[in-house]
Image 1 (cartoon, one colour):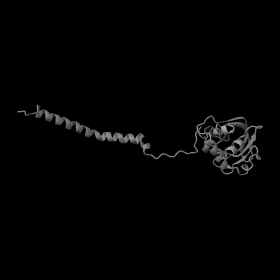
Image 2: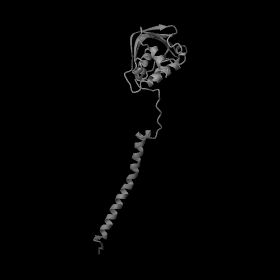
Image 3: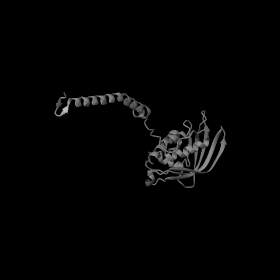
Image 4: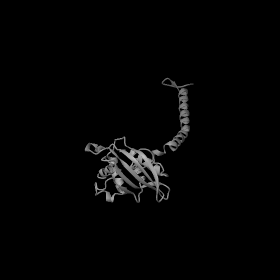
Length: 221
């Protein structure tokens, strides 16, 4: 005899119950596989979600990558790239940290600045210049009439006429964005075989705004 409750037989209820139990059992069997898949997914590509990010170098700027300066001419290429990207870190890596010297185009101009000019002065000048170029682009260093000669001590002297273009926000105050002149760079390799600029001499081109003028303007914050 089959009993019915509200029109549904007990047999039908039993079948429905078994069906639900079978579905739940199948789901429980699949859960370990699902968890394993999620763990593998995190391990393969999601580890960075929990990793501590390194803070960005405030001096990094942008521009072309810095190339290992195992030849003197690569230092000049790195100097171009640092100016293009207004990258203080790469600019400073072009200079010798211990004994860098700069000979300005006109020492009698801004005479209070030049006697103590050194590696740290270059950083201050370039940091201020970079700050004045925020959200601006088109910076470049163009060289012509380049020549290289060996100098005593195993170094190289690179001489070139330059046109330095830096689009900064002080142009509205009458500060030129283009400097012209001739630069003379004395470069030497360190014990690690990497080259850097030890001495930099600037020569103005007539009455043109020179690189020395650019440095003396922006070393003042």
